[in-house]
Image 1 (cartoon, rainbow, N blue to C red):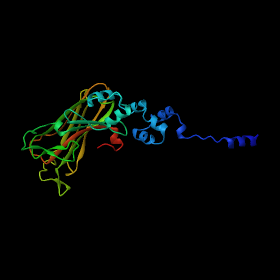
Image 2 (tube, helix red, strand yellow):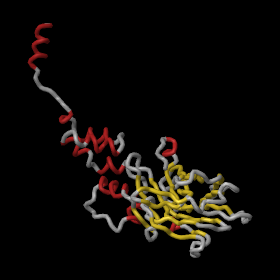
Image 3 (tube, one colour):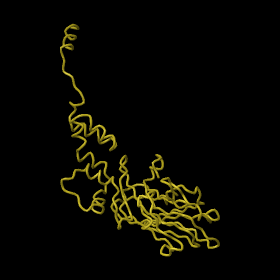
Image 4 (cartoon, rainbow, N blue to C red):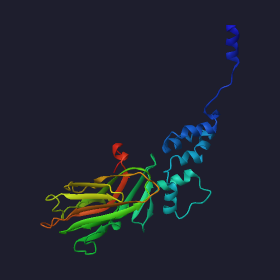
Length: 280
């Protein structure tokens, strides 16, 4: 009996491989992977390639309120677009509010990110060139930053209304002491006008339409480096309702002037990016 069993085992020459796994089973596996991992596995064979195009796989990676994002960020999406193509378009920077704001999905996690340009903020004295100027620079995603030469009353405010997917978000100001430029093709930062920031701390604040509030303050330092100053966090529970977030950066002690500061943008990221080291 043992010999017969052994012979049968030897005669069974059929083999199975990855290509024999049903496409539906592969798709069920891909549901549990990240978008990056899905794209890598799509190169294995036809079954994985077909499963990696399945709408239900990519819909699970999209924010639940992706319909709002599509309606408000795209000029229009052809009916022939698959969910993977919608995901890919959302991963690109999508501008709105006359180009002063950009929204995109972080490719790995599908988390929503937002950047608000200096020109999308309310800056006290911005129309007086004795105090402020907009200067071009390759160091900003918006190619322009607001540069402060000198002022007594420093105040930068902004707000955004958006249907954020449910989750916890962190808000940052991206600023730098010193004026960036290039000299002989190399980066150079002019620090001539930096003064006043070591005398009093800057106050950061955020307030949401549902009553959440955060407050922080610190002294500005590290000239020549873009720093992301964490203002605070807020929580979104209803992804289908507009959340209004107001934020500010102030140093209004009029006993001294301050200057030599670049304001680039305000950033909003999922808070878990900070825990994973992905935050700006």
